[in-house]
Length: 414
Image (cartoon, rainbow, N blue to C red; front, side, top):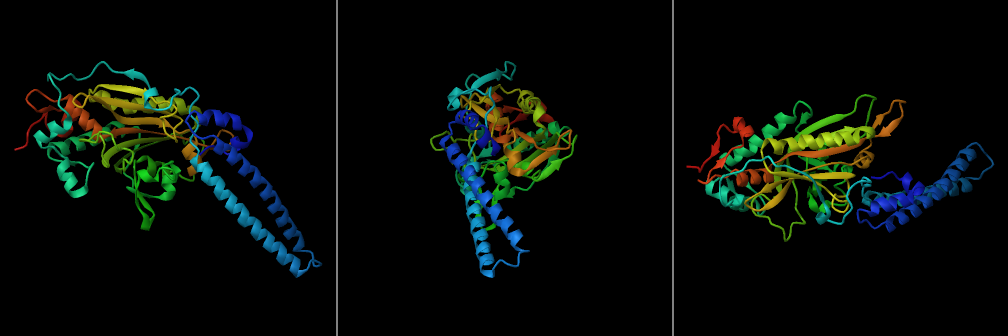
């Protein structure tokens, strides 16, 4: 969440910056009015409490007056609590401030391609087939069988398909394991933890929940990894902190109506390796560049055709201060597929989760958080199947995965 002090001290700046994300900035005026009202109520309540302290030693005050004062304090506390809840509701709704140099725009059409590769594997096939056809012929991916047990937008990996998924995860963990502390966190978290990362309360429709237990299936390892730092104050010199988390992730894909959901393009459940950083604000830009390079290395090593998008202010999402998408090209589907979002959240998550550090003067400051997808398997698998298909219908295994697969080529089962 944003620093509330800015609402009272620099409201025009907030309106300008947050308005770049398409947010209704009139809500900031409402919030400023509520904060001013809170100041008045807090001052009045403080006066009543001070009077109570004086009356404790004053024997001349009647019991009836003391009772009335107690009732006035209780009413003041209830009114203040109700006001604070209204403030929190608006506060949690406000998006993060985008970086000043983030591209302007309303939606994905305004995103900017900042880098793209020229060196990638080029298959000798004349016509590329989509991965759902190739995988079905090879009997390595079965969405119909998955639908039988779980419904639509699920996948069942079989034989070499299962090995390919496992190889990708193992490779990603081995690649990042020395730099980032590897974690396998719980796959369910509380509402409180999802609120820390900005996935609640605004985006509840995109999550799977077990209401009876106040538990949610995680949409990404970012949630438990960041939540694990909650209410932590790091001593000087303890930042940065790097974490690498492997989990199964769950998303409703509530906004997927009308979009292509064939094969592995959009699924409700998927395996992913996530990278999370907690850093000091002064190093955020350098840490973001470093994180982007770490996430990009995977697709480079796989020799997939890739590009990097600098997301515009209207498409980067509420929690981001800056966000880059790494996309790979799927020549069968003739589509660019997003396989990693890499960004920083400035103090937006850390302020919610109370993640702090002590500066060189020993003063407590709010930290910055970053995250990026080190390996999101479904679309990477889709791109590999399409880009590496051979004229005889087989799939060449990318060289870096062969030690983990135990083969060079994926052939029909049987």
